[in-house]
Amino acid sequence: MEKKRILSDRLFPTGCLAELVPFESGASRATACGYVDRMRYAAVGDSFSEGLGDELPDGSQRGWADLVAAGLPGDDVRYANFAVRGRLLRPIVEEQLEAALTLSPAPTLISLNGGGNDMMRPGTDTAALLTLIDRAVQRVVDAGIRLVVVAGPNPSQRLPFGGSIDRKGEIITSATADLAARHGVEFVDVFHDEEIRRPPYWSADRLHLNAAGHQRAAGLVLSGLGYAQAAHMVDPGPAEPRRLRDEARYYREHVLPWVQRRLQGKSSGDNRSGKYVTWTPIKA
Image (cartoon, rainbow, N blue to C red; front, side, top):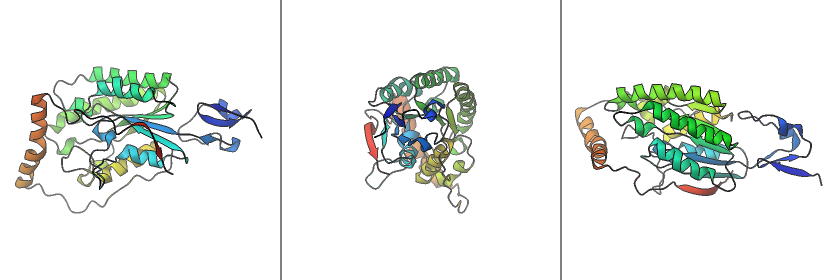
C-alpha cells in the first residue's frame, strides 16, 4: 500500500509536488495525486451569518453560511457557526473567532463578517472597526487557515437613517477589500451586489435577508471561493407599494422595538450562543 502523509489535514501520496504549490481559491491542486479534502468550515459574525430571516418550519434559522457549508465539495464536510444576532464587531473578533480557532481539529476555512450593528449606532469609529478587522485577518492568516471576508448586504435604501448606514458601509467595505487584498485572503462583496438590494430578497423588517436573499448570498460566497455556483435570482414581480398604513405598521413592529432595546442597553442576541459551536457533519 502506497505511503501517504497528512499535511494541513489534506492527504497526499508521498512525493506529490502538489503539496508544495500555494493553495489558490477553488483550485483542485492535487486531484491527480489522490487528493482527499477533509473540509471543516467555521462561520463567525452577527445575524447575517447566523441566518436570521431564513426560518425553517421548525423555527430554526438556516442562512447563507449553512448553504455554503452544504455546497462545499467533499463527502465529509464539518461545519460550525458561532454567529449571534446583534453582536458588535469586537466580540465577534475577540470571542467568536477565538472560539473557532480553538476547535479541534482546526478549521480549514473560516468566514468572517461583522460591523453591521456597529454601523447602525451613532458615532461609529470606522478606523477602530478596520483595526479589529485587520487584527482578525492577521490572526487567521497566522494560523494558516483559509479565510473569506464577507461584506454583508446593503439594507440602507429602505431603512430610517439609511444614508448614514450607506456612507459608513461604503467606507468600511472599500477599506476591507484593500485590507483583504493586502493579506492575500478572499473577499466577497455582497454590499455592492445590486440584485440583492431589491425588496424581494428582504424580510419584513427590511434589515435582514429572507430565504431568497440568503440563497443569493450563498451563491456569491461559493462563487468567490472558486466553486461553480449560480447566484440565486427571483422574479421581481410588481413594484412594491409604500402605503401609509404599511409604513406605520413597519415602524410599530420593527423600528420601535429596536429603539427600545437600544435605550435599555439590550440586544436581540442577549443570552444567545452560536447555533453550532462544535463540529457538525454536513451530508453530501
